[in-house]
Amino acid sequence: MLGYRTMSGASCNATHMGLCALERAGVVQHILTQNVDGLHHLATHGGVGEAGLAASPKYTTSDARLIELHGNIHLVICMLCKHILSREHLQQELIAHNKELYAHYQADESRMQPDGDYVAPPDVVEAMRLVYCPCCGGHLKPHVVLFGENVPTATVTVSMDLVRQSSCLLCLGTSLQVYSAYRYVLAAKEKGVPVVIVNSGRTRADGEESLKIDTASVAQVVDEATRELLPR
Image (cartoon, rainbow, N blue to C red; front, side, top):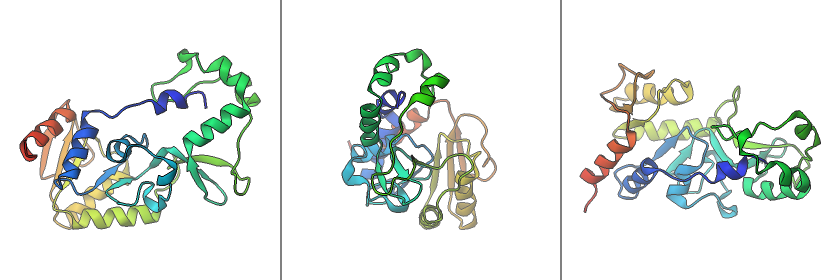
């Protein structure tokens, strides 16, 4: 509750917008992202609104061009009945139930962490009133794959099919250390799909790629690609 307003204010960068332009032009067919910040979704669809919650395994709108492998922090899901609602809706409910607490602490930016977490004092955590699922009263959690959880099987199946049918797999700004991403490189190589890696430093897939661009600026590479491939 206390950190969400700052986190939700994040904006798309040049890489998000460049990929969006390439996707719209048909150069990039699908985007698989490990990020849960929703910024690819924002660039492509203009955010996650109530009308976009029929997400099924892809946690996104129905065109299936964007698959958020680890979910979207701007959605929450009931741990019992699996009802999905927007995090913004939950935010308003939490504020309504914790008005004094929110008014006192929300301005204290010194407790904000770089990853969007807010380090609240233990007494605040104990005093906070929770909001439960409006359908069944169950506990709500962010609609993301937390540490120790697995990517939903349906998401993996859809993503694997897309990789195997693609003409090239482009890996941007990732070390591929997490197996939930690295396995797509293995699947591509098995099917003879070329793998291009654009990243700063070593990756888990070094030696598996057809081409690697070691760069400190992924955004610059994407910008050059848009200039070269898109009509002026």
